[in-house]
Length: 250
Image (tube, rainbow, N blue to C red; front, side, top):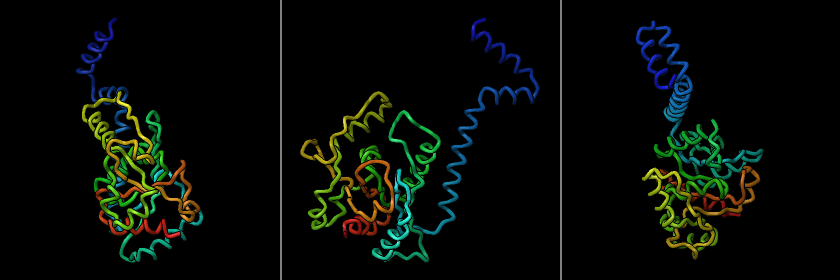
C-alpha cells in the first residue's frame, strides 16, 4: 500500500475515533515537537522570571565559554572598587553560564539554552560586554552587535589600545547579513585575520585583545586569545569602558 493511501486511511479512521485515541495518535506522531516546544517556552519563561525578579544591573559581562576559578571573586571585587559600583542597590554579573559550541554542526541542549538566554538578554539591553576567546567571539563580532571602539574610546585610549584591536571587515559582515536575509544556508564566510586590518576592505575595530594575567588566573577560557567586545546597545557604556581600562591597568 502506498504511503499516502495508508496516511489517508489513518486520517479517516481517526475522524471516528474517541478522544483518548486521538490524543494517543497526536502524541505518538508529534511528541518530540511538543517536547521541544515545551522546553523552549520553559527556557524563555525561566529567563524572563530571572530578569523580572532581580535588581537592576550596574554591569553585566558575558563570560562566554569560560569557567570561573578560585580567584574570580577577588578579581571581581577589585573591579567593583575600581569602577566604584554600588553593590547594595544594583547587581553586577560575570556570567559563566553561557556556553555555545563554535561548531555549527553541533547544537546540543546547552548550546540551545545558552543561545536563547543570550538572545533574550541582548534584546532587553541587559548586556554590557562579552569576554571570551577569539574563536568564540568571531560569530558575534561579525554580526553587528558590538560597538566600533573608535566611537566609544577617547583619542588617547584609541592610541594606547590600537595595537590590541580585533577587527572585522564590514564588507564581509554585509555579505553575511545578505545571506541571512536570503535564507542562504550554503554561504560560508571567508573571515579575514582579525589582527590584519590592512588586508581588509573596510576594517572596523569591534573588540580588543587583553593579556591581563589576573583575568586569566581567575577565569579559564576554552580557546586562545582572550577578547572583549562592548555591546552596541549597552546601557552602561562608561562602566564598560572602565572595564577595558581596568584590564589594561597591569
